[in-house]
Length: 262
Image (cartoon, rainbow, N blue to C red):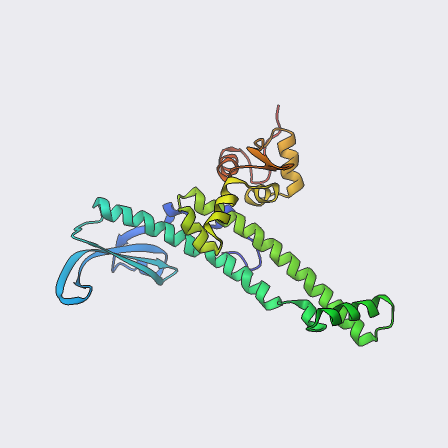
Protein backbone atom coordinates (compact mmCIF):
# COMPACT_ATOMS: atom_id res chain seq x y z
CA UNK A 1 0.00 0.00 0.00
CA UNK A 2 1.01 3.64 -0.37
CA UNK A 3 1.69 5.97 2.52
CA UNK A 4 -1.37 6.53 4.63
CA UNK A 5 -1.99 10.10 3.46
CA UNK A 6 -1.93 9.32 -0.28
CA UNK A 7 -5.23 8.56 -2.02
CA UNK A 8 -4.88 5.21 -3.84
CA UNK A 9 -4.93 4.91 -7.59
CA UNK A 10 -7.37 2.43 -9.11
CA UNK A 11 -4.46 0.08 -9.75
CA UNK A 12 -3.59 0.04 -6.04
CA UNK A 13 -6.80 -1.74 -5.09
CA UNK A 14 -6.85 -5.52 -4.83
CA UNK A 15 -7.95 -7.25 -8.05
CA UNK A 16 -10.05 -10.42 -7.64
CA UNK A 17 -7.93 -12.09 -10.34
CA UNK A 18 -4.90 -11.73 -8.06
CA UNK A 19 -6.51 -13.59 -5.16
CA UNK A 20 -5.11 -17.10 -4.89
CA UNK A 21 -7.57 -19.93 -4.24
CA UNK A 22 -5.72 -22.88 -2.73
CA UNK A 23 -6.09 -25.90 -0.48
CA UNK A 24 -5.54 -25.07 3.20
CA UNK A 25 -2.26 -25.92 4.86
CA UNK A 26 0.27 -24.88 2.20
CA UNK A 27 1.24 -21.49 3.65
CA UNK A 28 -0.91 -19.28 1.46
CA UNK A 29 -2.80 -18.26 4.60
CA UNK A 30 0.14 -16.04 5.55
CA UNK A 31 -0.74 -13.69 2.70
CA UNK A 32 -3.96 -12.76 0.90
CA UNK A 33 -5.91 -15.74 -0.39
CA UNK A 34 -8.95 -17.97 -0.19
CA UNK A 35 -8.11 -21.30 1.45
CA UNK A 36 -10.46 -24.27 1.24
CA UNK A 37 -10.72 -27.76 2.62
CA UNK A 38 -13.32 -30.44 3.31
CA UNK A 39 -14.39 -30.55 6.94
CA UNK A 40 -17.13 -31.53 9.37
CA UNK A 41 -19.02 -29.38 11.84
CA UNK A 42 -21.92 -29.69 14.22
CA UNK A 43 -25.36 -28.38 13.41
CA UNK A 44 -26.62 -25.12 14.84
CA UNK A 45 -28.61 -25.75 18.02
CA UNK A 46 -27.99 -29.50 17.89
CA UNK A 47 -24.37 -30.52 18.69
CA UNK A 48 -25.20 -34.14 17.97
CA UNK A 49 -25.93 -33.40 14.32
CA UNK A 50 -22.69 -33.61 12.33
CA UNK A 51 -22.52 -32.06 8.89
CA UNK A 52 -19.82 -32.16 6.25
CA UNK A 53 -18.82 -30.13 3.21
CA UNK A 54 -16.34 -27.56 1.93
CA UNK A 55 -15.12 -24.79 4.23
CA UNK A 56 -13.74 -21.58 2.72
CA UNK A 57 -11.65 -19.07 4.67
CA UNK A 58 -10.44 -15.71 3.41
CA UNK A 59 -7.15 -14.15 4.55
CA UNK A 60 -6.01 -10.57 4.12
CA UNK A 61 -2.29 -10.16 4.74
CA UNK A 62 -2.37 -13.20 6.99
CA UNK A 63 -5.48 -12.16 8.95
CA UNK A 64 -8.46 -14.54 8.87
CA UNK A 65 -11.38 -12.24 8.03
CA UNK A 66 -14.25 -14.51 7.00
CA UNK A 67 -15.43 -18.12 6.82
CA UNK A 68 -18.12 -19.87 4.78
CA UNK A 69 -19.21 -23.52 4.93
CA UNK A 70 -21.01 -25.18 2.01
CA UNK A 71 -22.77 -28.30 3.23
CA UNK A 72 -22.62 -31.47 1.10
CA UNK A 73 -20.04 -30.00 -1.29
CA UNK A 74 -17.03 -32.20 -1.93
CA UNK A 75 -14.69 -30.08 -4.04
CA UNK A 76 -13.79 -26.51 -5.00
CA UNK A 77 -15.35 -27.08 -8.44
CA UNK A 78 -18.83 -27.48 -6.97
CA UNK A 79 -21.06 -24.71 -8.46
CA UNK A 80 -22.28 -23.59 -5.03
CA UNK A 81 -18.69 -23.40 -3.81
CA UNK A 82 -17.71 -21.35 -6.87
CA UNK A 83 -20.52 -18.91 -6.13
CA UNK A 84 -19.24 -18.57 -2.57
CA UNK A 85 -15.70 -18.03 -3.89
CA UNK A 86 -16.81 -15.08 -6.01
CA UNK A 87 -18.71 -13.55 -3.09
CA UNK A 88 -15.74 -13.95 -0.75
CA UNK A 89 -13.40 -12.40 -3.32
CA UNK A 90 -15.67 -9.35 -3.40
CA UNK A 91 -15.53 -9.26 0.39
CA UNK A 92 -11.73 -9.41 0.29
CA UNK A 93 -11.30 -6.56 -2.21
CA UNK A 94 -13.76 -4.46 -0.20
CA UNK A 95 -11.89 -5.13 3.07
CA UNK A 96 -8.57 -4.34 1.41
CA UNK A 97 -9.82 -1.07 -0.09
CA UNK A 98 -11.48 -0.01 3.16
CA UNK A 99 -8.00 0.21 4.71
CA UNK A 100 -7.23 3.28 2.59
CA UNK A 101 -10.38 5.04 3.77
CA UNK A 102 -9.71 4.08 7.39
CA UNK A 103 -6.19 5.50 7.26
CA UNK A 104 -7.44 8.80 5.85
CA UNK A 105 -10.33 8.95 8.32
CA UNK A 106 -7.83 8.45 11.14
CA UNK A 107 -5.94 11.50 9.88
CA UNK A 108 -9.15 13.52 9.85
CA UNK A 109 -10.02 12.38 13.36
CA UNK A 110 -6.54 13.21 14.65
CA UNK A 111 -6.90 16.80 13.43
CA UNK A 112 -10.34 17.16 15.00
CA UNK A 113 -11.87 20.64 14.89
CA UNK A 114 -9.00 23.18 14.91
CA UNK A 115 -11.37 25.95 15.99
CA UNK A 116 -11.72 24.24 19.37
CA UNK A 117 -8.12 25.23 20.07
CA UNK A 118 -9.34 28.81 20.22
CA UNK A 119 -12.51 28.23 22.23
CA UNK A 120 -15.36 25.73 22.53
CA UNK A 121 -18.00 28.42 22.05
CA UNK A 122 -18.41 29.63 18.42
CA UNK A 123 -19.18 33.13 19.72
CA UNK A 124 -15.83 33.24 21.51
CA UNK A 125 -14.11 31.87 18.40
CA UNK A 126 -15.45 34.77 16.34
CA UNK A 127 -14.48 37.25 19.02
CA UNK A 128 -10.89 36.00 19.07
CA UNK A 129 -10.66 36.12 15.27
CA UNK A 130 -12.04 39.65 15.32
CA UNK A 131 -9.35 40.73 17.82
CA UNK A 132 -6.72 39.43 15.45
CA UNK A 133 -8.23 41.43 12.58
CA UNK A 134 -8.24 44.57 14.72
CA UNK A 135 -4.60 43.99 15.77
CA UNK A 136 -5.59 43.92 19.45
CA UNK A 137 -4.59 40.30 20.11
CA UNK A 138 -1.37 39.54 22.04
CA UNK A 139 1.48 37.67 20.24
CA UNK A 140 0.67 34.37 21.94
CA UNK A 141 -2.89 34.52 20.68
CA UNK A 142 -1.73 35.44 17.17
CA UNK A 143 0.53 32.40 17.18
CA UNK A 144 -2.39 30.23 18.26
CA UNK A 145 -4.55 31.63 15.48
CA UNK A 146 -1.81 30.90 12.94
CA UNK A 147 -1.56 27.34 14.25
CA UNK A 148 -5.33 26.90 13.91
CA UNK A 149 -5.27 28.22 10.35
CA UNK A 150 -2.48 25.79 9.45
CA UNK A 151 -4.41 22.86 10.93
CA UNK A 152 -7.54 23.90 9.05
CA UNK A 153 -5.53 23.89 5.83
CA UNK A 154 -4.24 20.39 6.64
CA UNK A 155 -7.77 19.24 7.45
CA UNK A 156 -9.09 20.55 4.13
CA UNK A 157 -6.31 18.74 2.27
CA UNK A 158 -6.89 15.37 3.94
CA UNK A 159 -10.66 15.67 3.44
CA UNK A 160 -10.01 16.22 -0.25
CA UNK A 161 -7.78 13.13 -0.36
CA UNK A 162 -10.51 11.16 1.40
CA UNK A 163 -13.10 12.31 -1.17
CA UNK A 164 -10.82 11.20 -4.02
CA UNK A 165 -10.16 7.83 -2.37
CA UNK A 166 -13.89 7.31 -1.79
CA UNK A 167 -14.75 7.86 -5.46
CA UNK A 168 -12.03 5.43 -6.55
CA UNK A 169 -13.09 2.86 -3.96
CA UNK A 170 -16.72 2.96 -5.10
CA UNK A 171 -15.64 2.74 -8.75
CA UNK A 172 -13.42 -0.26 -8.01
CA UNK A 173 -16.13 -2.15 -6.16
CA UNK A 174 -18.71 -1.37 -8.84
CA UNK A 175 -16.31 -2.53 -11.56
CA UNK A 176 -16.02 -5.93 -9.90
CA UNK A 177 -19.73 -6.48 -9.40
CA UNK A 178 -20.12 -5.68 -5.71
CA UNK A 179 -23.85 -5.04 -5.09
CA UNK A 180 -24.92 -1.49 -4.30
CA UNK A 181 -26.16 -2.46 -0.84
CA UNK A 182 -22.73 -3.91 -0.02
CA UNK A 183 -20.89 -0.86 -1.41
CA UNK A 184 -23.11 1.27 0.83
CA UNK A 185 -22.29 -0.89 3.84
CA UNK A 186 -18.54 -0.67 3.25
CA UNK A 187 -18.58 3.09 2.68
CA UNK A 188 -20.98 3.88 5.51
CA UNK A 189 -23.42 5.62 3.18
CA UNK A 190 -27.07 4.86 2.53
CA UNK A 191 -28.00 2.66 -0.42
CA UNK A 192 -29.86 5.59 -1.98
CA UNK A 193 -26.80 7.85 -1.70
CA UNK A 194 -24.57 5.16 -3.16
CA UNK A 195 -26.99 4.62 -6.04
CA UNK A 196 -26.93 8.37 -6.78
CA UNK A 197 -23.14 8.34 -6.81
CA UNK A 198 -23.11 5.50 -9.32
CA UNK A 199 -25.81 6.95 -11.57
CA UNK A 200 -24.68 10.60 -11.45
CA UNK A 201 -20.92 11.09 -11.20
CA UNK A 202 -20.14 14.84 -11.25
CA UNK A 203 -17.04 16.42 -12.75
CA UNK A 204 -15.20 16.15 -9.42
CA UNK A 205 -15.96 12.42 -9.20
CA UNK A 206 -15.01 11.70 -12.81
CA UNK A 207 -11.73 13.57 -12.35
CA UNK A 208 -11.01 11.68 -9.13
CA UNK A 209 -11.65 8.28 -10.71
CA UNK A 210 -9.48 9.03 -13.76
CA UNK A 211 -6.70 10.65 -11.72
CA UNK A 212 -6.76 14.16 -13.17
CA UNK A 213 -7.76 17.63 -11.97
CA UNK A 214 -11.34 18.79 -12.49
CA UNK A 215 -10.38 21.46 -15.03
CA UNK A 216 -8.32 18.87 -16.92
CA UNK A 217 -11.27 16.48 -17.14
CA UNK A 218 -13.54 19.32 -18.33
CA UNK A 219 -10.94 20.17 -20.97
CA UNK A 220 -10.82 16.58 -22.18
CA UNK A 221 -14.60 16.51 -22.46
CA UNK A 222 -14.63 19.78 -24.40
CA UNK A 223 -12.02 18.41 -26.83
CA UNK A 224 -13.81 15.04 -27.20
CA UNK A 225 -10.92 13.26 -25.46
CA UNK A 226 -13.31 12.04 -22.77
CA UNK A 227 -16.95 10.94 -23.05
CA UNK A 228 -19.74 13.48 -23.24
CA UNK A 229 -22.00 13.69 -20.18
CA UNK A 230 -24.74 11.09 -19.88
CA UNK A 231 -27.04 13.68 -18.33
CA UNK A 232 -27.19 17.01 -16.54
CA UNK A 233 -28.47 17.94 -13.10
CA UNK A 234 -29.30 21.57 -13.53
CA UNK A 235 -26.21 22.89 -15.31
CA UNK A 236 -23.90 20.25 -13.82
CA UNK A 237 -22.81 17.52 -16.26
CA UNK A 238 -22.92 13.99 -14.85
CA UNK A 239 -21.80 10.57 -16.03
CA UNK A 240 -22.79 7.05 -15.10
CA UNK A 241 -19.85 5.49 -13.28
CA UNK A 242 -19.66 2.77 -15.96
CA UNK A 243 -19.05 5.47 -18.58
CA UNK A 244 -16.10 6.82 -16.62
CA UNK A 245 -14.67 3.34 -16.02
CA UNK A 246 -15.06 2.46 -19.69
CA UNK A 247 -13.03 5.56 -20.54
CA UNK A 248 -10.35 4.54 -18.02
CA UNK A 249 -10.19 0.99 -19.40
CA UNK A 250 -10.11 1.84 -23.10
CA UNK A 251 -7.92 4.91 -23.38
CA UNK A 252 -4.32 4.30 -24.44
CA UNK A 253 -1.33 5.81 -22.71
CA UNK A 254 -0.72 6.59 -19.05
CA UNK A 255 -3.51 7.54 -16.62
CA UNK A 256 -4.40 11.21 -16.88
CA UNK A 257 -3.01 11.62 -20.40
CA UNK A 258 -5.49 10.69 -23.13
CA UNK A 259 -4.12 10.92 -26.68
CA UNK A 260 -4.69 14.00 -28.82
CA UNK A 261 -7.33 13.69 -31.48
CA UNK A 262 -5.90 13.58 -35.01
